[in-house]
Image (tube, rainbow, N blue to C red; front, side, top):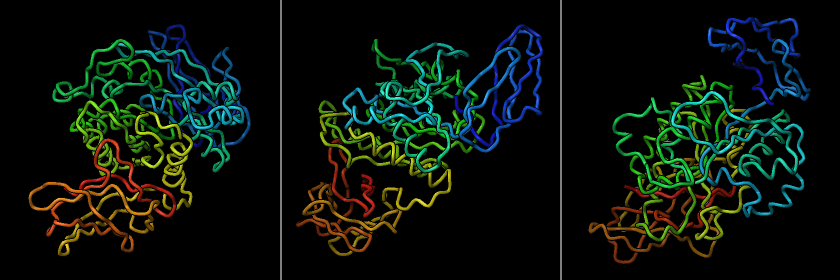
Length: 428
């Protein structure tokens, strides 16, 4: 087990009704905590944890002894299959990564795939040290995130993997936070292999963890909501807000991955683009959130699960290192659209994160389209002008709109010098 360092950590359990519970932690044996269970036998107390070290601690609760407790940083990893999948699912260099995954100070807790119609208080989980065997069974993104944090922070890292492939965001939101409009617009596709009703995954896979103290959350989800992209920004704001409230931290860091280009084929070609736009809006408008762009990590747009999970985890970790841990991490944010100005027949695109130097990784910039007064888009030429992009096309005398990679599949080839892709966008 890993407990969050330098924190007031809730600890809870059950006993006989109205029984005194005495709690002693090995890091401070003089600070004995006593509480009394209620008439249902439930009790809760708070442990004060010190700064992290590399020692194995113990906690005693009456006659129960919890051994091998570490103090460090605890992160929850959630979402759908791109977060759930482990290295056995065709991950880049998966077997080599697993064989080298002996990290005694990284601890892994995997929540089973279970759904419930009502909130549950118990879940069958265990904490394991990171070994090749335990790593093979856990979230690849979660592991690579934890590994990056551990190498930079040199403190124990705990990851709780609670993710389920194919799930829409609605199933991860507590029922009491749904408004009538949210229920009306909820994704409720019928299937037999994953939960499809609001709150069902939350009830069994998140609720039993509340109010375990977390350093933050990483999230990789959205593919199952793409057809309903218009509602996704609001869904995510409610999901993040509800988790922050229930875990007792109004500023709980929440970093997520923008869905990757993929050929959905059967749908119109901007559903995924609109979902990515909604994700960007969440990151722009909600404090203590951040979004990593992974369009450059796609090697096959026919594979909805990009095999490079190493860089996904590393990019998420850079957000945490910069914003949670105060490390000097340069250029950890992808450039995002800020504004468009028109000069004669050319559109000049300005980005947020303007200090990042832009480069093109191909012979010419790809992914831009432009429209004039008629609103009809045509492929566009583009060039880098300082840290801006100039866009134009023959026959467009006065541009009104510009788009970059704003469809399901286009990956683009604009990056920062640090290797981060420019986020897809439409100017309006």
